[in-house]
Length: 143
Image 1: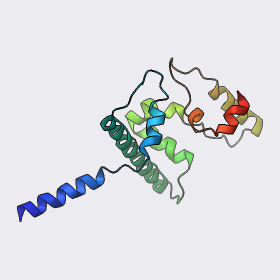
Image 2: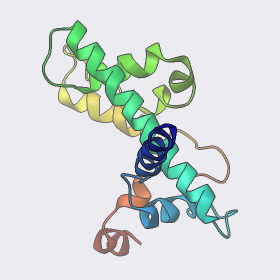
Image 3: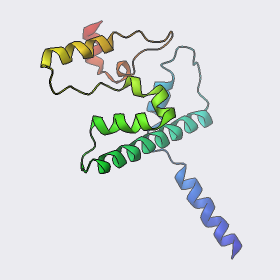
Image 4: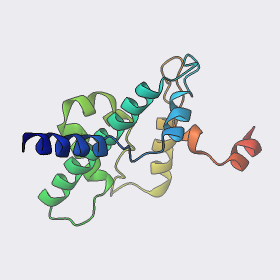
């Protein structure tokens, strides 16, 4: 009877190690860093699963914030509140989230705020992740 329980646990743990994100895409994102030459398959799996857990945590915290506000839809406001309430997430993500649009400001001032955020200097050796997700045709046209 003990072997049956162990086998069931092993099967569950192996099934839970199947990542929701495609490993090839994660590998491309990791290799954006010029210092990364090769990515070990075990390390790639850990990065992928860690990312999956982080997004799950952020989604759960955002959902809790939406429920507190009696909302059925998660909006940027709830994601920002969730990131701010969780100290490790606040430390690295909160400043990267887009600012909430102010209700009293006009449209042009919001655009100015977004462009000033986009011009914020990045740490050496990094670049915005949106560069990776651009369509091939749009990057060729810009260069």
